[in-house]
Length: 174
Length: 451
Image (cartoon, rainbow over all chains, first blue to last red; front, side, top):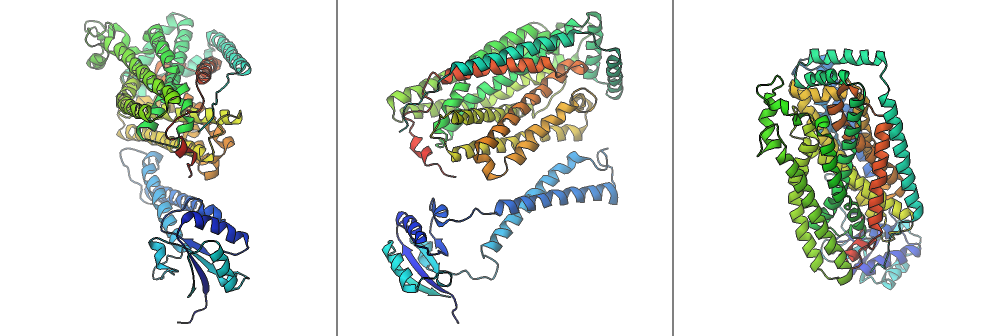
């Protein structure tokens, strides 16, 4: 297989060392692609300088879509397309529509959010995830640095990683 | 460990509260003067027309009651009606502020029973709010005995007299709930005993929990925390029953022919979310005044989520009650909502209630940042507190005042008097003990709280 993406991969054992390493490495101007860890590390997102996820906005928009679709469907079907007398109520009476509207809002918000999350996190079906080091699912923290997005050479980055407490520094090509 | 921090009840704050109370009294007097002037002829005609419409469309007990009430009041001039309105407003404010007080204790109990760590630095605020419980007990008993016949239709003894013309079979069937073990129509022993027992139990558990919370400041360790957790668990069981029964007693029995299985939860939800808003509001004001350094955006976020979540919970209960009654369409149930929503002076309150308590908190508190900032939280808390004052108005006033109620200087004035007295008690007790627990076993956890 032809490899056109080159990464330097640092392996860390301790999360405190990792957190300080992330800060120092970013101070040196190295761009970190991603850090993989077997458990949530508090403060890692802030240290990596991630922007806040915009997933809640997507969720809100999906939810609003659900609300509007559900209300419109019920009003058009029961009010105009095929009016039926149910329980002696008006054809378009709001209270009985609310439970359906609520459920549809929640359904679309949830499905939309999960779908969006899968797409933006590269977890699409038939997409084989890149594993930088299998031990990130067990007991090691793994830091991946993309050489293409950094000006420093491979050796310089390896040295910086070692200086900041990386146990091993490997190379990974995809 | 937090250093000694004490809230200082400054004379400036006292003066502000006093002015608030005086303004309230002036508005109240103005309202009484306004209400005691004879009503305009045209207004009377209009309300009579509405009333006829309702009686014609809903030929049931409550509407007939309304007609009866009016015929009584025509004879005695305008003063009985004004007195009735004052008593209604007193009861309305009293039920609302009683709820705020008891929610102070309930909040603490929830935190201990759930072994929550995040709330450690703010627990003294609900503790201070709980100091209203004994005063609420005295006020509730006092106002009840002062106004029982005016507020509670079921207290009239002629309703239980089989020989009399006013015999009410439905109420006689429910009589045991009020009068047991005495004869129906005599002294409502069971009802009054419940009232006394509930306040007694609440006050007892408040004192037990307070004693151990303050002893922990001096002695430290975990033994006090464990004891409070035990008391909290017992209190929660008691409160589960007493909050529902007090809602039936103090709110639902105003419309004695009407019944709703959701009403106990509805009153509790209203109390709970307004209590949460009050706790949060006091936290924001204390932080603005430079206190509570330990409380950061994460703690505010949790309080904000509480208000957001329970505003939706309240709406859920509101809607569950409304939808079932709307769909079943049984006259003795629907009259409750017809009185409030369709043909009465209360319909604007009915819809304002939904906007203030659902739409605004829902939209304003949805973004993450809104829950982490003092400014937005403050706005939402005030909206929720005012909104639930309207909510209790909507529950209590239409049932008593029928078509003669109003919301003017009289109600707002009394509300201000209650706010001023309530805040005086709360802030005064807050200044009596350290503002932040000194040796709380979970303080360290709370300092690292991160969401």
